[in-house]
Image (cartoon, rainbow, N blue to C red; front, side, top):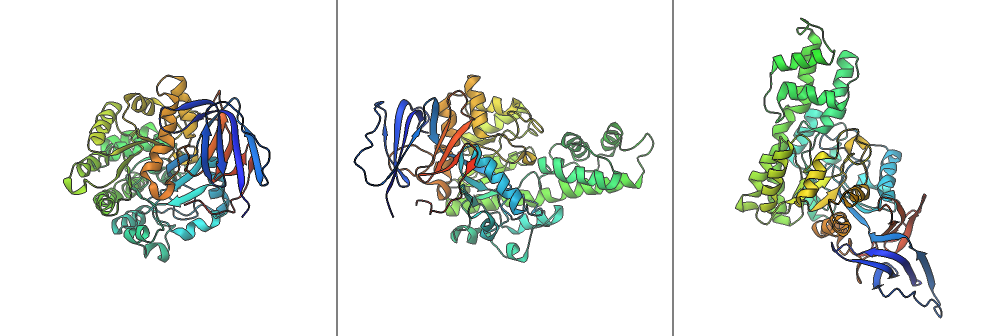
Amino acid sequence: MEQSELYIVGGTVITGDGHTMLSNATVHVVNDKIVDIDASGNRPPLVGNDHAIRVINAERGFVIPGVVNAHAHGCTTGPVFSSAAAPLDREHAWRNADRHLAAGVTTLINVCGLGDQQDLTALDDHPMRIFISTTHFAEAFAAARIVDGAGLSGRHEALHAQEMLSGGQAVAIGEVGSGATLGGGVSSYKYVPQAVREIFGQEIDAAQAGQLIDSLLGARRELPERDEAFDGCLLKLGLIKENNSQDPKVAQLKEAIMRYAYEPVAHSLKTFEQAAALSAQTQYPAVFHTALPSVATLLEIATKPLYRDAILVAGHMNHTSIPLEDMLVYAAKLKDAGVVIDVSVLDSVSTRQLVTPKEIDALMASGLVDTLSTDYAAGHWDSMLEAIQRWWRKGIVPLPKGVEMATSRPAAIFKAAAERRGRLAPGYCADIVITEEVNIGRVRTVIIDGRVVREFDAVVPRHMDCCS
């Protein structure tokens, strides 16, 4: 194969180590590896070579490592979420992957957890490096069947988490539980509104659905049959009129909410210890759904000596079900117990359909956060680089530290997906993103394994092997 060289010149290089920024630097790539970073300001001599050379001018831009997103959904054609909902079609999954790529993501782990490698084949030609995780435990399948299970096939149900890891099909354990089987966000924006539509013929939004769930079960999803509060919420939302609480539709909705937000919870929580044990045994990281119904369970597991060797990740520590004051306390205790504290951007930066920045800003300001991700937010997620731009401009997090949380830190934890990535340094794989200097959230160019795969709106399919 003919050797190719790439020079990225004139930009401000942020290496991903958490502190280094090099102005007017040159990144030199040969084939799929970074071979040098020259901070002298001198442009490279480009004469006398007989092989392919390309120069990219990164002036007035940042040059950063490719973003590693270890908590995403909707980028395969397999079962969706821990409820194993019906798969997305290829076009929808491809579109989701394109959004991540356009936001500078070069490595992504789809953590729905109940799919397999065949569910990735429809995206084989996508330039972004996409991997899957595993939660193929008996209790996870049980929880999925209670809520949904439409995406499961006999092929999926024959799989086991340990074999998924040992066979190289999965690169992580997770998402252990999710809002779909722990009475969280997916219940609020998908299943309960669907039930209200079918039973009452009315539309409610995610916030209203959350109010219904809370009124019946409590925020911890452990107090069923709270009839008075539930009836009051039905009245408030206009689903029933005064003295109409005996309407058979009320019983139907109550049964639906119990099914979606209460009955699967015990099954989901049982998988937490199984996942921790498997992580301790295999050294693959386990990503947990962290929310009010599950955070105490995660903390209890994290403090057991039996799981001292496990790599535990508190996914979306900024989950809005946890009161902010308690959230900061739990985050500190989990971090002291050796748990990785991850925050998911969700739609908190600019979209704000489901959440506001209050919780994520507070966690970032606390200094407790290790890694960033997006999660799904009903398909409305904002980008990690947009969030970093916000925190940098508000003085909450220095820019190099924010970049580190989105690149080298997750790469170091999820090694099976991103080893020798997430840093700009000699010997590392050439996953590189060029952004605007005035706004790091505006991506200009994406390079994966030394190959330009996106320039502005042009996407080029991948036809070369990833570097090892």
